[in-house]
Length: 356
View: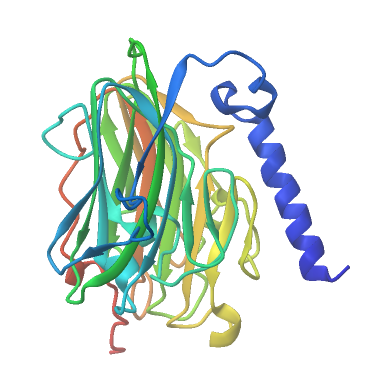
Protein backbone atom coordinates (compact mmCIF):
# COMPACT_ATOMS: atom_id res chain seq x y z
CA UNK A 1 0.00 0.00 0.00
CA UNK A 2 1.33 3.46 -0.89
CA UNK A 3 2.41 5.71 2.04
CA UNK A 4 -0.19 8.33 1.14
CA UNK A 5 -2.96 5.71 1.32
CA UNK A 6 -1.64 4.44 4.64
CA UNK A 7 -1.70 7.99 6.02
CA UNK A 8 -5.25 8.52 4.76
CA UNK A 9 -6.39 5.22 6.30
CA UNK A 10 -4.79 6.05 9.67
CA UNK A 11 -6.30 9.55 9.66
CA UNK A 12 -9.75 8.23 8.77
CA UNK A 13 -9.55 5.73 11.61
CA UNK A 14 -8.56 8.52 14.00
CA UNK A 15 -11.53 10.65 12.94
CA UNK A 16 -13.94 7.75 13.39
CA UNK A 17 -12.45 7.06 16.80
CA UNK A 18 -12.89 10.72 17.72
CA UNK A 19 -16.54 10.57 16.71
CA UNK A 20 -17.21 7.51 18.84
CA UNK A 21 -15.50 9.13 21.82
CA UNK A 22 -17.16 12.54 21.38
CA UNK A 23 -20.23 14.02 23.09
CA UNK A 24 -22.99 11.49 23.79
CA UNK A 25 -25.48 13.54 21.78
CA UNK A 26 -23.87 12.33 18.53
CA UNK A 27 -21.81 9.31 19.62
CA UNK A 28 -21.90 6.33 17.31
CA UNK A 29 -22.46 3.99 20.26
CA UNK A 30 -25.66 5.95 21.02
CA UNK A 31 -27.25 5.29 17.63
CA UNK A 32 -29.47 2.49 18.92
CA UNK A 33 -31.27 4.66 21.50
CA UNK A 34 -34.61 6.38 20.70
CA UNK A 35 -34.41 9.87 19.16
CA UNK A 36 -36.80 12.58 20.25
CA UNK A 37 -36.10 15.03 17.44
CA UNK A 38 -37.30 15.55 13.87
CA UNK A 39 -34.55 15.56 11.24
CA UNK A 40 -34.78 18.54 8.87
CA UNK A 41 -32.67 20.24 6.21
CA UNK A 42 -32.26 23.70 4.73
CA UNK A 43 -30.98 23.24 1.20
CA UNK A 44 -30.35 24.89 -2.14
CA UNK A 45 -32.22 22.01 -3.80
CA UNK A 46 -34.31 23.03 -6.79
CA UNK A 47 -37.92 23.37 -5.49
CA UNK A 48 -39.22 22.05 -8.82
CA UNK A 49 -37.40 18.75 -8.28
CA UNK A 50 -35.14 19.33 -11.28
CA UNK A 51 -31.39 19.95 -11.18
CA UNK A 52 -31.21 23.72 -10.76
CA UNK A 53 -29.72 23.40 -7.29
CA UNK A 54 -27.14 26.21 -7.45
CA UNK A 55 -27.70 29.69 -6.07
CA UNK A 56 -25.93 32.71 -7.55
CA UNK A 57 -24.85 35.60 -5.32
CA UNK A 58 -24.33 39.00 -6.92
CA UNK A 59 -21.74 41.45 -5.53
CA UNK A 60 -23.13 43.00 -2.34
CA UNK A 61 -26.00 40.49 -2.17
CA UNK A 62 -26.94 38.49 0.92
CA UNK A 63 -28.36 35.00 0.45
CA UNK A 64 -30.51 33.51 3.23
CA UNK A 65 -29.38 29.91 3.66
CA UNK A 66 -31.63 28.92 6.55
CA UNK A 67 -34.53 30.55 8.43
CA UNK A 68 -35.82 28.08 10.98
CA UNK A 69 -38.57 28.63 13.54
CA UNK A 70 -38.74 26.43 16.61
CA UNK A 71 -36.34 24.82 19.04
CA UNK A 72 -33.45 22.71 17.84
CA UNK A 73 -29.88 22.62 16.67
CA UNK A 74 -27.87 22.53 13.46
CA UNK A 75 -25.77 19.37 13.35
CA UNK A 76 -24.03 19.45 9.95
CA UNK A 77 -23.29 22.15 7.38
CA UNK A 78 -22.15 21.27 3.86
CA UNK A 79 -21.46 23.71 1.06
CA UNK A 80 -19.48 23.97 -2.16
CA UNK A 81 -18.88 27.08 -4.23
CA UNK A 82 -18.06 27.99 -7.83
CA UNK A 83 -16.88 31.54 -8.34
CA UNK A 84 -14.67 33.33 -10.88
CA UNK A 85 -13.01 35.25 -8.06
CA UNK A 86 -9.83 33.52 -6.81
CA UNK A 87 -10.37 35.03 -3.35
CA UNK A 88 -14.03 34.15 -2.83
CA UNK A 89 -13.30 32.23 0.39
CA UNK A 90 -12.29 35.54 1.99
CA UNK A 91 -14.90 37.66 0.19
CA UNK A 92 -17.88 35.57 1.32
CA UNK A 93 -19.01 36.19 4.92
CA UNK A 94 -21.17 33.69 6.80
CA UNK A 95 -23.41 34.97 9.60
CA UNK A 96 -25.53 33.05 12.10
CA UNK A 97 -28.13 34.73 14.28
CA UNK A 98 -29.77 32.88 17.15
CA UNK A 99 -33.16 33.63 18.73
CA UNK A 100 -33.69 37.03 17.08
CA UNK A 101 -30.60 38.60 18.61
CA UNK A 102 -29.76 42.10 17.36
CA UNK A 103 -26.32 40.94 16.18
CA UNK A 104 -25.03 37.64 14.75
CA UNK A 105 -23.13 35.29 17.04
CA UNK A 106 -21.17 33.92 14.08
CA UNK A 107 -19.65 36.39 11.63
CA UNK A 108 -16.53 35.47 9.68
CA UNK A 109 -15.25 34.75 6.18
CA UNK A 110 -16.27 31.35 4.86
CA UNK A 111 -12.65 30.31 4.40
CA UNK A 112 -11.61 30.99 7.99
CA UNK A 113 -14.69 29.20 9.30
CA UNK A 114 -13.50 26.04 7.51
CA UNK A 115 -9.79 26.55 8.42
CA UNK A 116 -8.86 27.71 4.89
CA UNK A 117 -6.98 30.74 6.17
CA UNK A 118 -5.10 32.04 3.09
CA UNK A 119 -8.28 31.67 1.02
CA UNK A 120 -6.97 28.58 -0.76
CA UNK A 121 -8.72 25.19 -0.70
CA UNK A 122 -6.86 22.47 1.19
CA UNK A 123 -8.41 19.06 1.77
CA UNK A 124 -8.20 17.82 5.35
CA UNK A 125 -10.21 15.83 7.89
CA UNK A 126 -10.87 16.59 11.55
CA UNK A 127 -13.59 15.75 14.05
CA UNK A 128 -15.47 19.06 13.67
CA UNK A 129 -14.48 20.56 10.30
CA UNK A 130 -13.41 18.76 7.14
CA UNK A 131 -12.81 19.70 3.51
CA UNK A 132 -13.28 16.90 1.00
CA UNK A 133 -12.75 16.54 -2.72
CA UNK A 134 -13.40 18.69 -4.49
CA UNK A 135 -13.82 21.91 -2.50
CA UNK A 136 -16.49 20.36 -0.27
CA UNK A 137 -16.75 22.30 3.00
CA UNK A 138 -18.18 20.46 6.03
CA UNK A 139 -18.82 21.51 9.64
CA UNK A 140 -20.08 19.40 12.56
CA UNK A 141 -20.14 21.92 15.42
CA UNK A 142 -23.56 21.58 17.13
CA UNK A 143 -25.40 24.91 17.03
CA UNK A 144 -28.48 25.06 19.27
CA UNK A 145 -31.30 27.62 19.29
CA UNK A 146 -34.47 28.00 21.36
CA UNK A 147 -36.95 29.57 18.94
CA UNK A 148 -35.36 30.94 15.75
CA UNK A 149 -32.18 30.54 13.69
CA UNK A 150 -31.07 32.48 10.61
CA UNK A 151 -27.94 31.71 8.57
CA UNK A 152 -26.85 33.95 5.68
CA UNK A 153 -23.89 34.46 3.37
CA UNK A 154 -22.91 37.83 1.87
CA UNK A 155 -20.76 38.39 -1.21
CA UNK A 156 -18.40 41.26 -0.42
CA UNK A 157 -16.41 40.71 -3.61
CA UNK A 158 -16.71 42.40 -7.01
CA UNK A 159 -17.65 39.30 -9.01
CA UNK A 160 -20.82 37.27 -8.96
CA UNK A 161 -20.66 33.85 -7.32
CA UNK A 162 -21.93 31.55 -10.05
CA UNK A 163 -22.98 28.65 -7.84
CA UNK A 164 -23.45 28.29 -4.10
CA UNK A 165 -24.71 24.82 -3.16
CA UNK A 166 -25.62 23.89 0.40
CA UNK A 167 -27.24 21.27 2.62
CA UNK A 168 -27.62 22.35 6.26
CA UNK A 169 -28.96 19.59 8.48
CA UNK A 170 -30.76 20.40 11.72
CA UNK A 171 -32.96 18.77 14.34
CA UNK A 172 -36.20 20.17 15.71
CA UNK A 173 -37.04 19.31 19.30
CA UNK A 174 -40.34 19.47 21.18
CA UNK A 175 -38.98 21.69 23.96
CA UNK A 176 -36.02 24.02 24.19
CA UNK A 177 -33.19 23.26 26.60
CA UNK A 178 -33.49 25.34 29.74
CA UNK A 179 -29.82 26.32 29.78
CA UNK A 180 -28.78 26.80 26.16
CA UNK A 181 -25.21 27.69 25.27
CA UNK A 182 -25.04 29.46 21.90
CA UNK A 183 -22.30 28.79 19.35
CA UNK A 184 -20.12 31.87 18.70
CA UNK A 185 -17.06 32.92 16.74
CA UNK A 186 -14.70 35.85 17.23
CA UNK A 187 -12.81 36.79 14.08
CA UNK A 188 -9.90 39.22 14.43
CA UNK A 189 -7.15 40.70 12.24
CA UNK A 190 -3.91 42.19 13.53
CA UNK A 191 -1.99 43.59 10.54
CA UNK A 192 0.67 43.65 11.94
CA UNK A 193 0.61 42.17 15.46
CA UNK A 194 0.37 44.87 18.15
CA UNK A 195 3.57 46.19 19.70
CA UNK A 196 3.95 45.50 23.40
CA UNK A 197 0.82 43.41 23.99
CA UNK A 198 -0.38 39.92 23.11
CA UNK A 199 -2.95 38.97 20.50
CA UNK A 200 -6.51 38.70 21.82
CA UNK A 201 -8.13 35.56 20.44
CA UNK A 202 -11.35 35.61 22.49
CA UNK A 203 -12.87 37.96 25.05
CA UNK A 204 -16.38 37.41 26.36
CA UNK A 205 -18.56 37.76 29.42
CA UNK A 206 -21.13 35.25 30.61
CA UNK A 207 -21.12 31.52 31.27
CA UNK A 208 -19.83 29.09 28.70
CA UNK A 209 -16.85 27.18 27.37
CA UNK A 210 -14.16 27.74 24.73
CA UNK A 211 -13.92 25.01 22.09
CA UNK A 212 -11.61 25.94 19.21
CA UNK A 213 -9.01 28.14 17.54
CA UNK A 214 -7.97 28.77 13.94
CA UNK A 215 -4.75 30.77 13.47
CA UNK A 216 -3.38 32.16 10.19
CA UNK A 217 0.00 33.87 9.91
CA UNK A 218 1.71 35.83 7.14
CA UNK A 219 5.35 36.40 8.11
CA UNK A 220 6.78 39.87 7.48
CA UNK A 221 10.20 38.88 8.89
CA UNK A 222 12.40 35.82 8.78
CA UNK A 223 12.31 33.53 11.80
CA UNK A 224 9.90 31.19 13.52
CA UNK A 225 6.62 32.83 14.54
CA UNK A 226 5.54 30.27 17.16
CA UNK A 227 7.46 31.13 20.37
CA UNK A 228 4.51 32.89 22.05
CA UNK A 229 2.62 31.29 24.94
CA UNK A 230 -1.14 30.82 25.12
CA UNK A 231 -2.85 32.26 28.22
CA UNK A 232 -6.45 31.71 29.36
CA UNK A 233 -7.75 34.08 32.04
CA UNK A 234 -10.93 32.59 33.51
CA UNK A 235 -13.60 34.57 35.38
CA UNK A 236 -11.55 37.75 35.69
CA UNK A 237 -8.44 36.22 37.22
CA UNK A 238 -5.37 38.44 36.87
CA UNK A 239 -3.08 35.42 36.57
CA UNK A 240 -3.62 32.99 33.72
CA UNK A 241 -5.42 29.80 34.77
CA UNK A 242 -3.94 27.97 31.78
CA UNK A 243 -0.55 29.04 30.42
CA UNK A 244 1.40 27.17 27.75
CA UNK A 245 4.94 26.76 26.49
CA UNK A 246 4.68 28.06 22.93
CA UNK A 247 2.26 28.63 20.08
CA UNK A 248 3.10 25.46 18.16
CA UNK A 249 2.80 23.58 21.47
CA UNK A 250 -0.70 24.99 22.01
CA UNK A 251 -1.61 23.69 18.55
CA UNK A 252 -0.27 20.27 19.66
CA UNK A 253 2.72 20.29 17.30
CA UNK A 254 6.41 20.88 17.97
CA UNK A 255 9.62 22.08 16.39
CA UNK A 256 8.02 24.29 13.74
CA UNK A 257 5.43 21.64 12.68
CA UNK A 258 7.64 20.60 9.75
CA UNK A 259 4.82 20.05 7.26
CA UNK A 260 1.07 20.19 6.82
CA UNK A 261 -0.90 17.43 8.58
CA UNK A 262 -4.24 16.87 10.27
CA UNK A 263 -5.76 14.91 13.14
CA UNK A 264 -9.23 14.87 14.76
CA UNK A 265 -8.41 17.68 17.20
CA UNK A 266 -5.44 19.63 15.79
CA UNK A 267 -3.49 20.15 12.62
CA UNK A 268 -1.86 22.37 10.02
CA UNK A 269 -3.98 22.94 6.93
CA UNK A 270 -1.64 25.33 5.09
CA UNK A 271 2.16 25.28 5.35
CA UNK A 272 4.32 26.66 2.55
CA UNK A 273 7.62 26.91 4.47
CA UNK A 274 9.41 24.30 2.36
CA UNK A 275 8.76 26.06 -0.93
CA UNK A 276 9.73 29.41 0.64
CA UNK A 277 13.02 28.02 1.98
CA UNK A 278 12.09 27.51 5.63
CA UNK A 279 11.15 30.05 8.30
CA UNK A 280 11.34 32.92 5.85
CA UNK A 281 9.57 36.17 5.24
CA UNK A 282 6.31 35.69 3.24
CA UNK A 283 5.52 32.18 4.55
CA UNK A 284 1.84 31.52 5.32
CA UNK A 285 0.63 29.00 7.89
CA UNK A 286 -2.88 28.07 9.03
CA UNK A 287 -3.30 25.86 12.10
CA UNK A 288 -6.29 24.66 14.13
CA UNK A 289 -7.07 23.17 17.52
CA UNK A 290 -10.44 21.87 18.70
CA UNK A 291 -11.02 21.66 22.47
CA UNK A 292 -13.50 18.80 22.13
CA UNK A 293 -11.90 16.81 24.94
CA UNK A 294 -10.53 19.76 26.91
CA UNK A 295 -12.98 22.67 26.70
CA UNK A 296 -12.09 25.71 28.82
CA UNK A 297 -15.14 26.45 30.99
CA UNK A 298 -15.95 29.84 32.51
CA UNK A 299 -18.82 31.18 34.61
CA UNK A 300 -18.51 34.99 34.31
CA UNK A 301 -15.86 35.79 31.68
CA UNK A 302 -13.00 34.54 29.52
CA UNK A 303 -9.94 36.24 28.04
CA UNK A 304 -7.71 34.16 25.76
CA UNK A 305 -4.47 35.74 24.53
CA UNK A 306 -1.42 34.60 22.58
CA UNK A 307 2.09 36.04 22.72
CA UNK A 308 3.68 36.79 19.36
CA UNK A 309 7.21 38.25 19.67
CA UNK A 310 10.41 36.69 18.42
CA UNK A 311 10.98 35.54 21.97
CA UNK A 312 7.27 35.22 22.61
CA UNK A 313 6.81 37.38 25.69
CA UNK A 314 8.44 40.50 24.14
CA UNK A 315 5.59 41.11 21.65
CA UNK A 316 7.99 42.53 19.06
CA UNK A 317 9.92 41.34 16.04
CA UNK A 318 12.57 42.97 13.87
CA UNK A 319 12.46 44.34 11.30
CA UNK A 320 8.68 43.85 11.10
CA UNK A 321 5.98 42.19 13.20
CA UNK A 322 3.92 39.49 11.49
CA UNK A 323 0.29 39.58 10.30
CA UNK A 324 -2.26 37.44 12.17
CA UNK A 325 -5.84 36.39 11.55
CA UNK A 326 -7.45 34.52 14.44
CA UNK A 327 -10.77 32.78 14.92
CA UNK A 328 -11.96 31.75 18.38
CA UNK A 329 -14.93 29.37 18.72
CA UNK A 330 -16.93 29.06 21.91
CA UNK A 331 -20.34 28.55 23.50
CA UNK A 332 -21.84 31.16 25.82
CA UNK A 333 -25.19 31.85 27.47
CA UNK A 334 -26.19 34.86 25.31
CA UNK A 335 -26.96 34.90 21.57
CA UNK A 336 -25.65 38.42 20.81
CA UNK A 337 -22.25 39.03 19.21
CA UNK A 338 -19.33 39.87 21.48
CA UNK A 339 -17.29 42.83 20.28
CA UNK A 340 -17.27 44.74 17.02
CA UNK A 341 -18.40 43.60 13.58
CA UNK A 342 -15.72 42.15 11.32
CA UNK A 343 -13.82 44.58 9.06
CA UNK A 344 -14.58 45.11 5.38
CA UNK A 345 -13.04 42.73 2.86
CA UNK A 346 -10.19 45.07 1.88
CA UNK A 347 -9.16 45.36 5.53
CA UNK A 348 -9.03 41.62 6.23
CA UNK A 349 -6.63 40.58 3.47
CA UNK A 350 -3.01 40.78 4.69
CA UNK A 351 -0.37 42.28 2.41
CA UNK A 352 3.35 41.73 2.90
CA UNK A 353 4.90 44.83 4.44
CA UNK A 354 7.79 46.50 2.62
CA UNK A 355 11.13 46.06 4.30
CA UNK A 356 12.62 49.25 5.78
